Image (cartoon, rainbow, N blue to C red):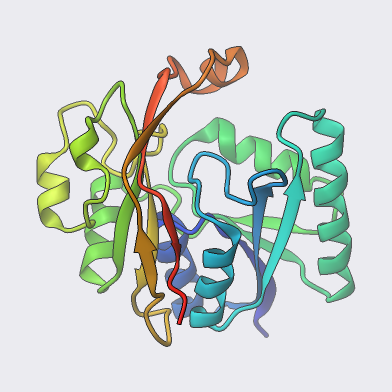
Length: 239
């Protein structure tokens, strides 16, 4: 019998490939995609993908989307309360597995497992241990299409924003940059591929930059954090 699962969805390439592998394995019955969004902006934090496009992705994939909206400036308790409500809903659906697209950051994995501890829901990581270059090659080889929506200005310049994730993108990445952006070097939005019934239609705007204040907690877990990030705004294509 397949494990009933929900997938922690970021809208990007690692999520898409992990979901593809999970479905292809035949082990999981994925009942929902779960995404957290900034309550004020209604975008995924850092990725800055609007919630409307997340619903379009879920519709094109054919798996319902559950959105947890939270105040990014509020205490951790508020976030945990919102997540707890989602977990309660999943348990009522007899969902016992949470799927993640993480690849190798041990601290992130431990944090996810700790949050699920005692919930009756176990964590699974379909991409865990795959070399990053192999992950990106598998993503491209499977026929996915994705666009880069955000880059960390300390390691990648503005020209990488808006590029498609093809072999040329991989070849052009500077030395020392994780090819999958596991340290936040870049984020992507997936709009087509083998898990999609049809492509997600969207429009793009003008690239812009944002400067963020230093974040001691982020630097503690991920190292030096850039002050500047470059973004490509994307939005639903209205008919």
